[in-house]
Image 1 (cartoon, one colour):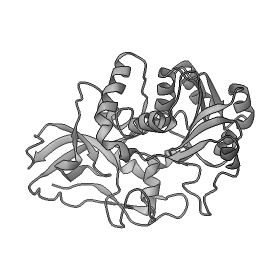
Image 2 (spheres, one colour):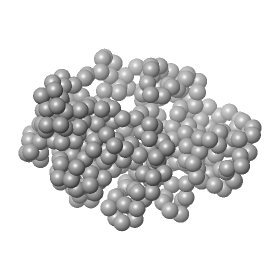
Image 3 (tube, one colour):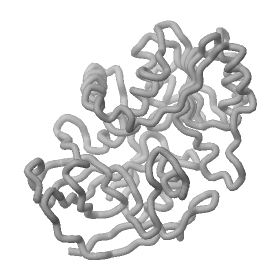
Length: 331
């Protein structure tokens, strides 16, 4: 049986280009004991994938040249030599950008398509949702009545951060690109304010929507937006560094916060978060968030693009702000 897969062919300099990957069609490997063959149905496309392409020390090993491009996904078990999974089971794991994945059973988790649509296990009930849950609640420590600001607020992580903050009784302001995204944050998700960084001045927007300052900032963007928020933080504020998508394709040095002395003046804390640190508690978080979804307190939006062959162009939507909700590739 033939497979289709994208391998990493070159390490990108700045913005990735299509030739950084190569589409191959090898035979599907035979299973050994403890392995499962998964027919991949949906793939999660995330900003973190850009970092995985760099040959640099990070929280996870880089993808090696010639390896299948790393990606989380959901699919159906087609063959099994594992006592934990049967043919027909739906599973979630690091499946890679390919049609069929041969994976060890230790790296898979069963999911139930009757409880939620499969793409949801890549969004609010997957890595982005877990990132939002633990990053906000464990690191941001929001308290009722506080003001929480979220950058990339209309993205997969940001939408969940803002909604959980509202559930916890906070005042929430999102920073997003475009009128439609900002309207969605306020009208559909219940944010208290939204700043359109593409068409308005972020500093002026923060002054308008955060007159009493910022207590928690959940940052997915970095760069100038991080500096602008640091100018508005309150005493003992918490800044959660989840990502810096504005910096990922830089060909020069990453631009760090020029306004970092605000942390000293306000005795504030800035802390990075990596979702994998909380892996043993994913089940508890998923149950709580599933409960919020059932109660109508937590909404999800997926942006689904069809076709494995469109992977390189679809991934770049993330860095151009073209996706609206969790970006998912339907294989």
